[in-house]
Amino acid sequence: MALLEVAELDVNYGPLAAVRGLSLELEESQVAVILGTNGAGKTTTLNAISGAVRARSGTVSFDGRNVTNSAPWKISRSGLGHVPEGRRIVGPLTVEENLLVGAYNVRSRGRRSELIDDVFDTFPMLAEKRDELGGLLSGGQQQMLALGRALMAEPRALLMDEPSMGLAPIMVQHVMDAVQTIAARGIAVLMVEQNATAAFRVATEVYLIEHGEVILHGPVDQVQNSELVRRSFLGI
Image (tube, rainbow, N blue to C red; front, side, top):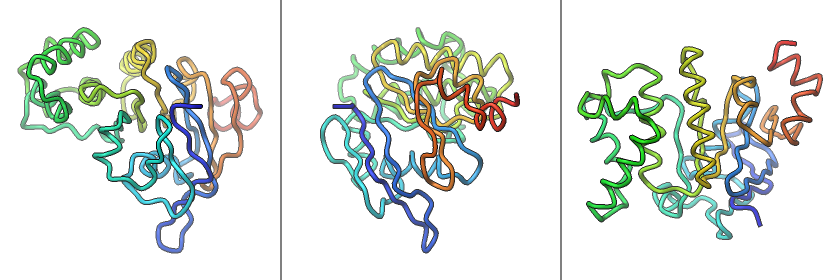
């Protein structure tokens, strides 16, 4: 049984079908990427999985439990984290305070300190900025902070929406290195990403979505050689 299973998911915005009959699976420690053009339904898919929008039909199962249309906080508490597009850092809070926001379910002060140390080990550049305001960080540093904040909840799986958006190439590399590190710790990652070249370096599985439907799915080494992906996402 997969850690995350999405079966025949439908999501509507009024009369508009944003996601139609979408199914996917995510195994423990796996990194899977969702590709698609703007408006294809990628973000809606992640939001429906995490409970941010309601599914009209279909099921979302996590760790063997049906979590379809559960409250986002309940889904988060079950071990499924979500790093949304745009980072959503709390600007007036310090880096450390932003991290503590992610540990709202962790009651032990000692455990919170351990988790912060783990985040700083994973992202040394954040350790150097520990007492700086989140709003003063660069875009890449804020993305690292968003990932670190999600890790503070001790997730078993993470949904990531466009983690490399707007970043310089060197920061994209740092983000993808972080994704690999996270997966190596046993945390599964389902990532929406427009930078296919960067995503293919760390992912093992690809879902290509068009008009809310999966039109191509398979291992990276197969999908990246398809004419559609080569032309539309790799520019070759």
